[in-house]
Length: 508
Image 1 (cartoon, rainbow, N blue to C red):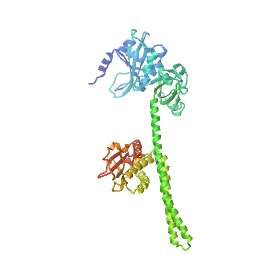
Image 2 (image 1 turned 30 degrees about the vertical axis):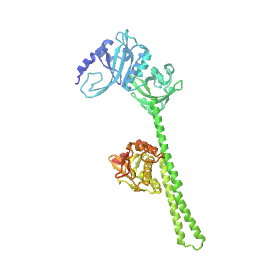
Image 3 (image 1 turned 60 degrees about the vertical axis):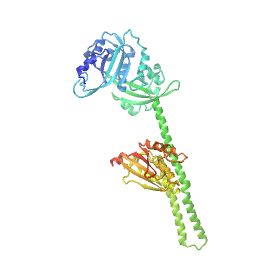
Image 4 (image 1 turned 180 degrees about the vertical axis):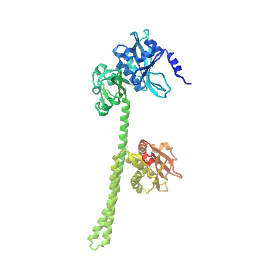
């Protein structure tokens, strides 16, 4: 069932509460229901021509600037409730319990006119008020304002400040003063940056440019300390509000200390994850330098010793000497290759997120995987797809995941109970997903459910491999991917590491 304009007007006029409809930008009155007209003693046409000071109490707490700030808070947060004292045609004042709500009307005509079928929409503020009669007990105004501001729809712990063009506080709600950790009296006349550490200086070019506009608005964060030393973070929305040709600045603030603390903890966890991954990477480097460089260096030394002994006999054949020198050169060349690979790998440890070739990351990782596999008699077969998949991420972290998964597979394949001593590492592209799949012919995963593998069931070792897999899952999830564990028919396990393809790959 839909209501036409006349039916809606009939409903509004039957309400015992007064309705005032303000334009969201100018704050001018557009319409009022019958109850509102009766309370003020004006017709709708007369109300449209009135200014705020004609309708509000002469009490400084209800002056025009405070009323504008109240309505602007409704624009920012969607709704705002407070006590407000109005004045009627005869000068009589009456206290109201009022709620200002932002409403978007569709099919609205020109401002101040009747609704039209133009299809246009306009933002208005609906103020619904209930007159508090003398027989009712009126709560303390300042306490009520503080409590009601704390119940802003969709936002809690919110307060308001009125600032001049130099960002000095002209007025402040009691709850805003409480958030800052000060009193209303102490805040009046002070610049905003004297009361708080602001993330962006007020003389920053962006803020200066934005706040020079009549409808300018900026978002800021403030760090405040109370007299007791309590530190609190506030989020603020600073708006220019133009009223009757004059501009006032309204700052609405709310407490975001818990959010900032969450961000701090999350940043710490990210930093710790980075550290753990780099720590593992450097451990791999140390293993390679200590173990793998020793073999070619020892071989080269033996060849050179052989050459020296042959030279000491004076009858050595040149062919024998050339062979020894060539072999020594070959072994030293291998040392050079290993050092180059390590240098390249270490340089990438500090890389930030970028578009990376997943095949390239796998190839670099397999160099280190094969070093481990050779010691345990395991063959590593690479089956990389021809369509080179790209993803956005940190190559060294992805490489660490691949190495960790492969090392677990090597440990499984190298067991005496495993007949087929090989594993396959492949890359695949399916839809918008790129995957690295590590398959082995080990004991398989029939012993544990798939969701227990990251906790340590993937390997029977007791040296902490499960922790490595948990870190792997965190790294992959941070890149928007996931790790799944599946049976590899007829035996063994298939670990699939999946990532979303980058737009470069999808569009290219």
